[in-house]
Image 1 (spheres, one colour):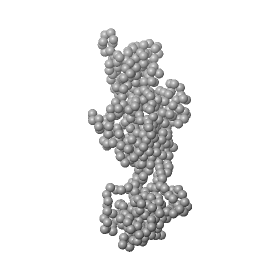
Image 2: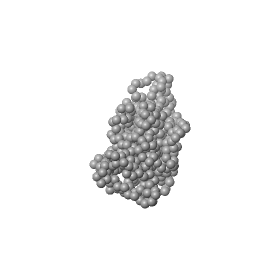
Image 3: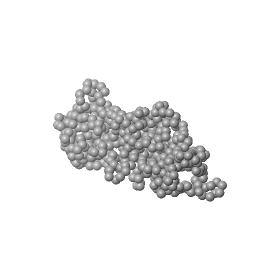
Length: 538
């Protein structure tokens, strides 16, 4: 079960269906070790700034401590209930023998010094650290009425050693002497009841140390500029019900696995929301040092699809930022003003084209909802859902992936907003072009539309409004034909031009025309937002 604090009111100016308010949560999960394929019980504590991972340990809270982490306890076998405990594990499965159950008010429970998860080290002075399950069962069954065992709490005991497997297994047979390391062996520990005399309870005395099992902090993962990954490193295998949180300083939470798909989805959204809130705070701090025309609109982690099929790793983490007139691609987040000059790639926002990949499934809203929550597996053309492309000049393109549909919607909205702001701020873009050997200038102007003039004399050759552009075609290289409608004659006039970077020019035309329509129709951005439309509907 998990608990969470009340969410704060949603921030103004942002769609409520896209972002989850920052929150605090606590829940028990599993820490999965991919090498050993074992999972360990941990407790997660989520605050606004930190994800803390706790592991259980047994600590001395009073009395005289015996030293180290070993505890030696003497049990008096009872006529009913025997030693009052069950064990699992054994060397034949490369796991220690661990106390898996302690029965209330029976011998083991009365000592107050034994706990589920204790590894049995010795039985009556005999070392059993490398013993099989059957050997330990035999020793405990034939140890007499007084049994002295030495234990140590195993903080990273595989979860199956401490949790019932849902089947009684061989230990349910009262008459059989057989036992299994994968099931609780408890009824076999009573020994021969006819030779067991009534004994006094195994209760602690005042001088004995007192122990408690507690959750202790073992790792804190700062969430500022942290990233989340649901995919196995170096592979395209999605970890269902699991994810990893990686801090900016390299600290990793490890692979956190949840008991249900719903728990995994809830935690993924909660951690993502807190990272997002901290990112907004970092943006506000950065914007204090920037001019009004160079503000950060949005930034965050994504995964970039690598070009070519030679590498086994097809996606690599990147940090993107929309700031002022530019779109930045970083390998690590910019943490200071000077870091903005070390971007791997920088593009002018007006000359890139943002495109959401189609990931939704027909009109089945239930499948869409399951996909959004990460509750169901599907095959995708892009191998990953929630992908978008950014196409730049000279035919360059990048394919990115995010972990949540809500993040995809925010990126789409942010690209639109940043691009439209830059169009309105700059007002126009002019490109050198040529036709029939003559050098010309082609200007895209937010207020006036398209203008073509001679580069030397500045003599205007033609001018058309955005609304007069009725079509276009290009050779995919350098040449383009623009089809304009003459307002007086209603005839179509064709203008042919040649550009050095045709792709950048076409993207600029698209950006300016979209911004112009949006300035007239405020609902245009919402109608064009594919990711937002489908995320909100699901």
